[in-house]
Length: 339
Image 1 (cartoon, rainbow, N blue to C red):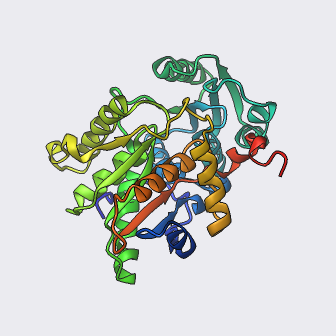
Image 2 (image 1 turned 90 degrees about the vertical axis):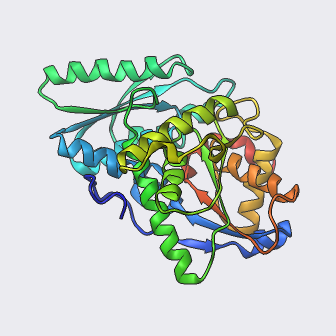
């Protein structure tokens, strides 16, 4: 495996299933649609962050740490799973919730992920600014210094891309190796991969894995937080760092390999659109698969649009990466209001 040399904690239920979606394929009358079920990674209701945390926690463990700190949005899947990972390791944990989404119902702040954060007993902090990644990270680094005075050896998992090593992206290098073995076993050739792209650890890990294995598979990322130009640069920078970690020439990734589309972003992070609501309803009714409004429904809406616009042929196999996020659904009661 490309990632064998890195320390890793065992937190996830792996391998996750690779499933064909016959009903959705028929409904959209397009290519053959497959789904990688990383909503089924197990830890605290699962999701893609568990694969990432295996490498962050592995690094922290190797450094002799005994506490985790991180930051994220109120309905952050990453925060929920970081808290769960710390609890599984028997470590102390604190998390910071950032105000990123305006105009939400009370359930957004109290149900779903924040409910689970509190249930697992983490000490929570609140950060009033939603678009200050550097400031949010710095607040956690400052808190880590305070914890050191109390005798802890804390490890901060940052969100920012600048100057940070994307250890978590290694989880998705590993995921591509796992998925390739599953596809080969079924005789399926993957023609394209669709992912949500936000922090870019998943997108960069998938792309880094594709490059590291010498595969010719385009990876389409649908933006969930920032515009396509800013996201393109973020993914490119992180993918280069992933390749450096893997001892692969960072120039093996070129700008045209980084495919980011912000059509599905709508009003912004965590905000509903008609396309997002359609994607949630379609997957639920056609396949019994749950999508969340922030990540998976936006990337699914992007894939649906590509299919409707004829971007793929019927003989192709398109792989959709389900990154989880189910608890966040409970923060959007309007999805079923009046039904």
